[in-house]
Image (cartoon, rainbow, N blue to C red; front, side, top):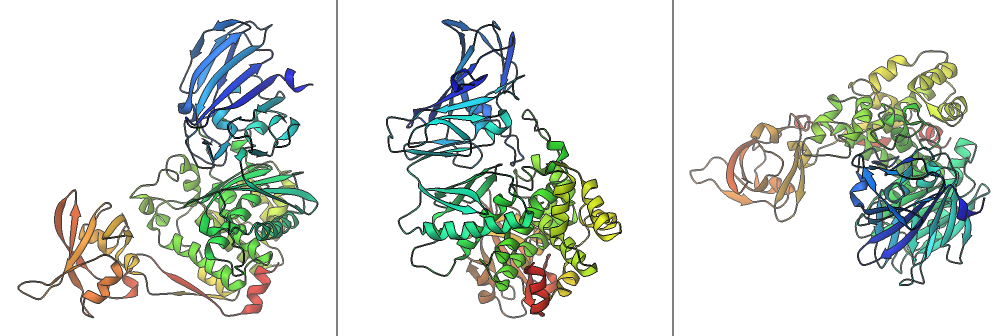
Length: 588
C-alpha cells in the first residue's frame, strides 16, 4: 500500500522552533461515523500518568473543504461526527518543552519526541498500518533524523516517511533530530547506530562505540537470541542530566557532559561507568519488559494506569544484570563491580521504608509513589529498582549455592516458557521449581512480598565476599539526608533517627550549634555536617542545633551518636575473601 493512502497517516512539521511547537496533521482514510481519538496519558516504561494532552491545542477537524465540530469527551479524548466515505483530517499543535526522555522537545538546537506525546490514537484502527511523515525544516537545513521506525521514502538526512504495522509500534519508536554525532557498529550480526546530541569536542565517540558493542554482544549472547533486526541508541548530553527509557529497537538516554569518555583519557571515570551501566540497563530491557513483560501490560492501556506487582522483576532484575554484564563484558573489574553493589546495598539499607513496604507493593504503587517522591519517601517506600536488584542477587547466589543452576538459566527459561511475551509471578515459581526440584514460594514471600531483611551477608560470604559494617557518614549517623551549601539544608529526616528525636524536619536550614557546659555556651556556624567533629569535644553526647524553619529560629536539643550502632541504618563495605569463588559468580 503506498504511504499516501495508508489507513492512518501523520504529517509532523517543525512548525516554530522558537515557540517550541510541532504541528501535526492526522489523516484517517476511512473514519467511523463517530470517530474517537485520544492522546495517551502515560508512556510505557515510565509508570506515571503524565497528562500529555495538556500540551495539545488548536485541534481542528475537516473533510474536504468543510470544517467539522470536535467534541471533547475527557481530558485526553475527542470525538468527531463525520461521513465514513471521505477521509477525515485533524490538525493540531503540540508544545514541546520537556528535555526528558519521556515527552517532547523542540528548539533551534535539537528536536525530539515520543509518539505518545504527539500522535493521537485513532480508536478502532490501532491494529491498522500507520505512516509517519516528518518534514524537514528550512530554518535548520543541516539537521539529521534518527529513529527505529522503518523508512519508506526518506531523503539523505532521513527526513521523510516511515512505516509502522500498528499504533503500538508507531509510538514505541522515538525520533531524534538535529546536528548530532552519529556512529555505527555491528553486534552478533545486528546493525546498531549510536547518535549523540550536545557532545563537546573532547568526546571520544569511537570508545563509546567499542564499549557499547561489547555490552550488546554480551547481552545478545546472554539471551541467546536477538529479537530486533536493528537498534538505535539516542543520547542527549546536558549539563547535569541522567536517565533512559527503553523501546523495542531503540532507547532514549540522557547523561551529563562530564560522563562522556574523553579523547586521550584511558581510565574510565565513575560517571562514564554509570553511563555504561545505563546503556546496559536499557538494552537489557529489549528482552526484559519490552517483550517478556507483565501480563497486566498486555496489551497496553494508554488511557489509565496499568497496575502490576512485577516491577521488582522487570526493573529490579534488569538493575542486577546491567552492572553484572559490564563485568562479564570486561568493561570493569571485580573490585569496581563490588563498589557498584555496595552503593546499591547501602541505598536499600539506609532506607527505613524497606521495613514498611514490600518490593511487590512498591511495584504496584509506582504510579503514585516512585515518581512523586517527597520528604517522607525514604520512610514509607522502598525502590523496586534497588531492592529488586538485591532480590535478584540473593536468588542468583542461592541458586548457585544449592546446585548447578543460576539466575541466568532462569531468565532464559522464562523467555522460552513465555515465548518472549506475557509473564506472571507463577511463571517465575514454575521455572524455579523445574530447575531445582523444590518450591521457592517461601523465598519469594519473604524477599518480595515481605519486609524482612534479605540474607545478603550470608549469601555474599558463601561466594567470596565479606560485608562489614563501616562507620556511618555524619548525616547517616544522625538519620538525615541533606544538601550542604552555605548552610545545611535538611532534605529528609529518616524514621527512628536522632534528628527525628530532636524535632528536625525536612526544609529546615541548620545554621549552627551551641555546646553545653558554660554559662554563655560557645556557638559555631555550620556549613557541612563533617564540621561537627571539629567543633565538639570527644565524648560530647548532647548539643543544641540552631535551626531556621519558616524564618523562625529554633533551638533543638540534639543527641549525638555514641557508637556506630546508633545509626538508624547500616553502612556496608564489601571486600573479597575468596577471589576464585567470586570469579565463579561473576565470570559466567
